[in-house]
Length: 256
Image 1 (tube, rainbow, N blue to C red):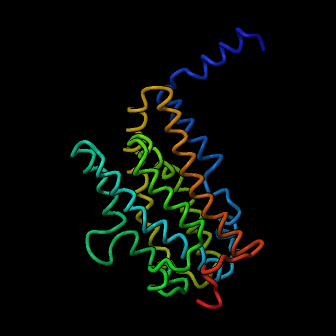
Image 2 (image 1 turned 135 degrees about the vertical axis):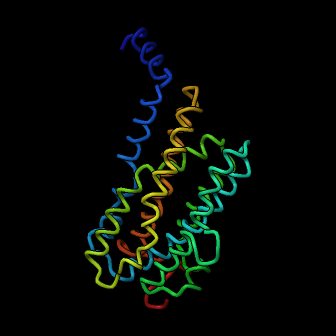
Image 3 (image 1 turned 90 degrees about the horizontal axis):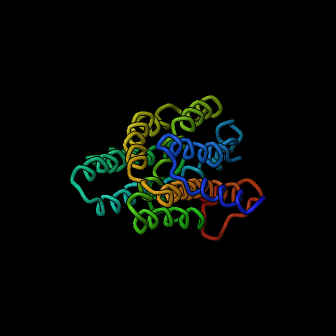
């Protein structure tokens, strides 16, 4: 490639994306990196997990679910206007509820009990995998420490969640006789909550990513969040599928 062609290519890569082009780039990240593509998810959806593997998934996923409101609270504390804080505060209510026993975290605990886990053991997080803890803690730190724009962009994995929820619920109900609609009740509200949240977050990102550097930061934030979700399934697969090496202190099905 000639010097002129290289310069032209560099200029094109530095050009500001339109709002539609930015959204398309975000959606391509989901198409390539979202964890519905992970082998462990395929096993879970297709009914190929043992009860113990489903329990390990529910236990480790609890740590992620329980830290989502903590992540959102750190972002709310940094938002500059009451309007933005009110918008993001809805997420706290969605996950923490507005009374004991309500909200997404409480529903996830009922899911964990429904697959045969002890509630107190799940809440203790004593048996989660080290990678689960590291990945989730890294996500909370990312939203706490990076720009507001990047923190909001990292939530945009919700653009892809309705697909994975539909696959997960239909597949688990069809393939595991010991799982009921009530066990999976966590997912029903998410089918309406997630699209609502995406509408705001995507609109914010498209409006406020005003330079190519900011747009690249937005794209990197979404890639990071996809990595956080993928790493958790990697750890589950390594510990409970192949090669089946469970780290010291982590959940051992026969001893739980």
